[in-house]
Image (cartoon, rainbow, N blue to C red; front, side, top):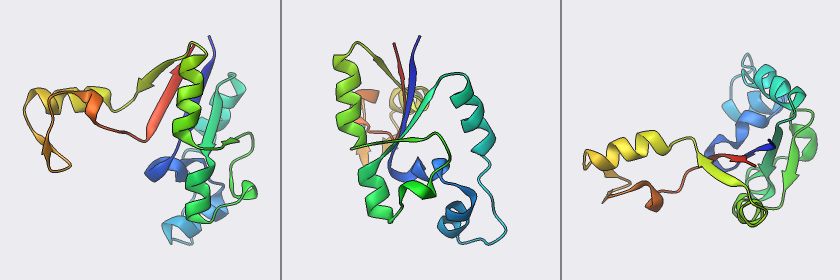
Length: 127
């Protein structure tokens, strides 16, 4: 099995090194608590990928990332590419979205009836 984790948008900072993480969080004493988890996943063969469009928008450079993180052009194109290669896209927010949709809650100001209409910024791809 090949696993890819593509980070973009609001959660992309999870893949930053400590120095850039501190700048992003505006806290000189903070550190990236995801560092060890990302390293362990990489050691297990998981690919951690970050959206270049998000990086560009935030002003981040390749040296601002944790070691081993791969930069992809943009997350949505990468997801389409992986789907065409036979990967299954798994949305980590799916369960809470379905729960909210089933309870007829309002998400982003609109009534949703299913998870397919909600875009999320954490994705795992499995093949």
